[in-house]
Amino acid sequence: MFLYLFLFIAAFIYANFLEWILHKYVLHGLGKNKDSRFSSHWHTHHKSCRQNENRDSTYRHFPLHFSVKGELQALGYVIVAHTPLLFFAPFFYASLLFFSARYFYLHRKAHVNIEWGKQNLRWHYDHHMGKNQDANWGVTSPMWDYILGTRVKWPTSTHSKSETL
Image 1 (cartoon, rainbow, N blue to C red):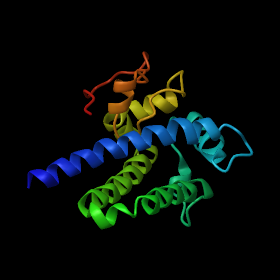
Image 2 (cartoon, helix red, strand yellow):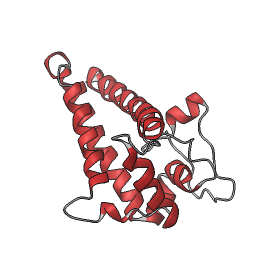
Image 3 (cartoon, helix red, strand yellow):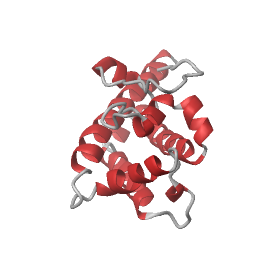
Image 4 (tube, rainbow, N blue to C red):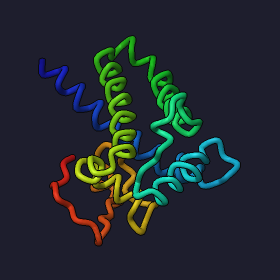
């Protein structure tokens, strides 16, 4: 039982680090270039959030908007890239699947239900609505932002719940 708990925690740490890296270097680093295949993150998602108090209505549309499809496609690539783990660390791989689904669920919910996002993913709200959109790279957890010194609280906001890693 201890092994499974260890693997689940390791998958959480790894998934959050991967989320931090991809958000910072791919979605923002490459995504700010309009010719990049990742440009919809910056030029559609961030633009919509800034104009609508962190709301991104593309998450409400069905069929899904191309920017949301791109996010799901990227998650699919991550899952496929980690498929070899299925053969020697199946529980770790299953945990990564769980954290991938959790990422999409929480990210979508934070941009559809703004008050919920402010209360439960404050660091992500600060990422979009704060003065510095090149900080707070963690979406589902601020853990790596604290470790790597990229957590910047928006000083004009009120943090009604304490942040948990």
